Image 1 (cartoon, rainbow, N blue to C red):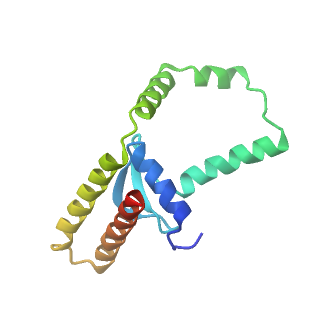
Image 2: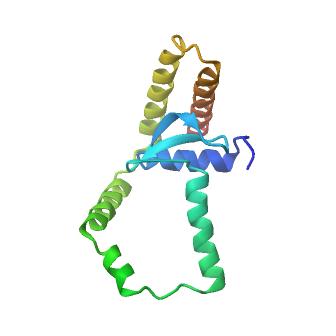
Length: 143
């Protein structure tokens, strides 16, 4: 993928924000801002795209392998159950576009406030890119 921000990338970024992800000031090699989501740092474009492609490949090949006992036990660990419950709770509490706009606006302000003291040009550019992408998302939410 190129570094260009497409509508598809913006939709993926927006979905991750809706799910409670936190936009970071760093970018992935694809150009998308990195996010903190469920304790991990992820790229909203690449990380979730890879998972979708794997599912598509499994479906196309019709080769969903039967799970062995080890895999079944792994899925039923208490930690997994808690994660599933949290995900369901988050899905039922999806913020509306006004709440999302507020979060993005606050992030833009936080990043902008750190720009004045930043002397590293690469970090200035990263922060400006984050602000630009946040503004694009805000524009999409208003349309």
